[in-house]
Length: 267
Image (cartoon, rainbow, N blue to C red; front, side):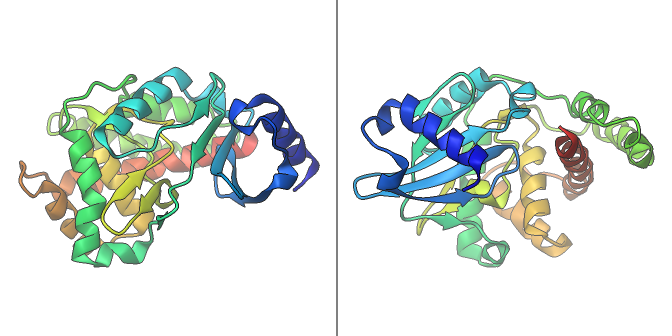
């Protein structure tokens, strides 16, 4: 651990009630992946935790009260763990899901696993729950573009112009906003034998169901054949959805992600 992380961990052990009476030496501590947060697994004799410490710039972009509200609803729905402790700054301590593993691109090839992957998203989108926060994709793209330095923006301008044309074409075909995770990267999806858990709800809000499905396809690197299989599995027992809109959302959210990563690199 570097000095910054050691200071962060010392603060956590001094401040979190669940860690009272313990110190870092009582745990095997390992870093976990994460772009917007510093994440650690704390594995001890009597407890196994995931500690999330947001990066300093992260809370400029995230509504932590909305995250807590939305994750609580998702927990009640049976698709998300509940944090054992959190504060208003986004620090969380959550028990690990010991029988789970991170989702892999290869999992999308199995019909059985594909059914497990789409089930929590289908349940969430069709739940009728009302998440806090709503995201208009056009406005969100523009907000992320404005986070860029002036020297970065020319490289994104042609893609932004194309995105606005695409949004104008699809806005009358899109689905009504539904409660959505909005960041289902593979590291946020934990697979057990018979279910998939969704973690890290900091970007959750009301959004088009295409949003979650498009990120799943992008993150898993699905080609057209496999993205069609995912959409068919998701739509089982419900209304059909359009492959063309899923394709358009994949491009739009790839642009959004690229803007975000470029902005995060300078923050």
